[in-house]
Image 1 (spheres, rainbow, N blue to C red):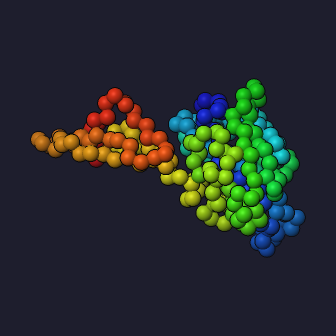
Image 2: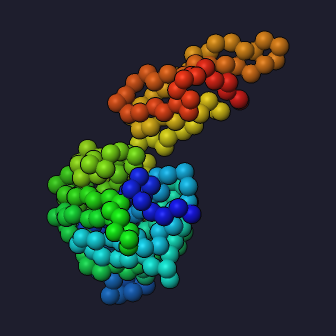
Image 3: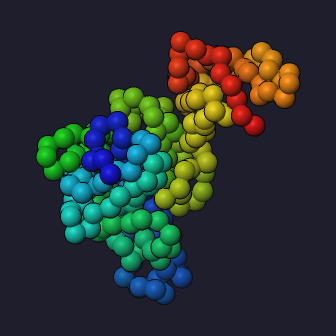
Length: 239
């Protein structure tokens, strides 16, 4: 596994002012509070597993992933840092990879957060604000990142955050209100990022039972479409 570093790990969901415990949750533990259901979701945006050992969260909340509680996140996978492990599992279950508890409290008004690695590497710094999406401020929804592949500066902008599709958010899963997951088309090695569309023009190739050949091009933006071999866009697609 590769170490966490800028460009492979981001904060993808923030539950900073969740609703208070319901009757079922209070039946599990009568001292649960709303703050205990706070969480941060981390997402691996790379195509390699990431070793989270040494990763630190700093700001209004603090937590360090040590060798003892070290995690590995698979490509496009998630990990949750929870305020209270028992409260988190009472609400969301045990399917996600979760560590905690973190120290401190996510501000209901917004604040600065930072991901670092123990060696001093700054991975990501962001600022969120409750005024961006009022439904996330005690209304039951969470802040879900729109484009996890966006420039790091956009993680401090309302433009790159959405209201979660589900009440309570979608910790450990890709939120339905986020950008479409980049998809590789056939074996053409074309990766379409968020806010970009690509199209293929059929060039032939069915003769004698051969595979079709298509020419791929970006047709809309502003997102990026990355071609595996920009010098040779004529590629053979398998179906």
